[in-house]
Image (tube, rainbow, N blue to C red; front, side, top):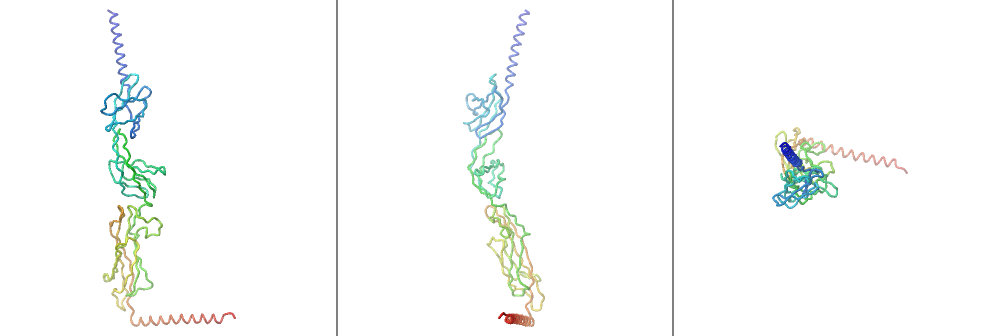
Length: 357
């Protein structure tokens, strides 16, 4: 009886041992850990020589296809794949992970704008964006937003997009490239403080005299710069639009003009002071030249008005001369002319006397 009990105890011990070994062997198969995902392959963590990796399409019949390499090429499914590890000693498999199929290839992206160092494409929250230049051996990282930065000015780039992916999903195929050249310079932000009104005249201005005015706006063509003046997205400029000549003591506008239809930011005009109300013998009056500037932004390939600004400058207008003043002006002119003639005569006479014989 004792021998039977010992035999049964030994049998149970053997069964328990094999059961425990089986449990240990089953538990020893680790989970698959993905380290890199490509467009058609997945790289998983290497588990050593005791393990192989198997995969099959979701919903496919049959057993997984096993391989020793931890780089697994996947194909044939529009849904996804299941990947697992197997211990070749125990023939036990671990839990399978799911790799989703790649998203569809998107259409060529749509260009919106650029600066000297950035390119902006039409926004799509489902896309990632990248730019590259094969000749320069340069490419950016993938951007989740539609503005690609870190570029060189005046350089052609190929811009592609791909669909964003979920966790454990094959990368999508890139779109056809859109060829885009960055701007030759950064955007110019004109300031209203740069605007001015210049007035040109000699001596004093009398009623009826014409005076030249020059309205200087704010943009590259108004500055002493040899920079590229071709507009780029985001440029801000101030363009002279209209001018008014106003007598300051009465507030009356006696003449005006405009530069409608011209995009130049430096413009000139002639102001006729005949309309100024000032009589002979009166004190000089001030005339204010007020210029209306249109603030514009270069947006989507054209200049768009976004605001207004006024600037001004003032000059005095003297009353017309009285009869006595006119006579004195005539006499002064005659005397000045006679003096010049007399000086010229003495100059020639002196030269005659001192000439060499």
